[in-house]
Image (cartoon, rainbow, N blue to C red; front, side, top):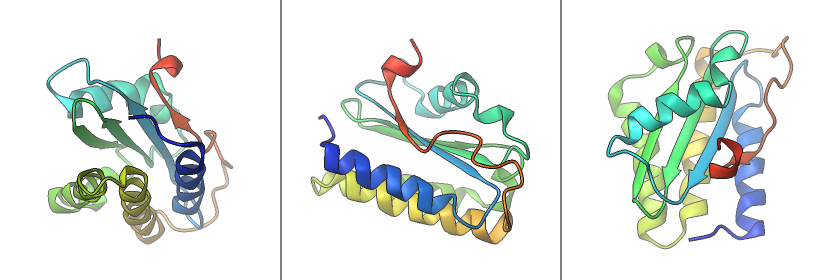
Length: 145
């Protein structure tokens, strides 16, 4: 499944919205297949590879989706992960799964990003003095090879 240009633009807007009024950074990584059985491990590895671990307050969140493998996971930094319980992180991946199941994956990603943005505004509020540390973009296999 390839995302349309309009879908990608909606996701990028949702990333920017999730980062609004907080000190967090958000990234969505989209690839066809998960190279391992463990999507959480893949998300953890990508978190470092994509430089999210180098954000000022380690309040970054990576939303990982392997659409052909039907896997989704979230990895977040030490500055934000303890602020939410496992049920919250599960609700983020459930939003993605619900969108995928209904044939509207981009909508599911946007809904998941809204949840992440609410969490960041609640637990890492304020002006991001470090600025937008990472581009508001969707990454894929080509960005990590």
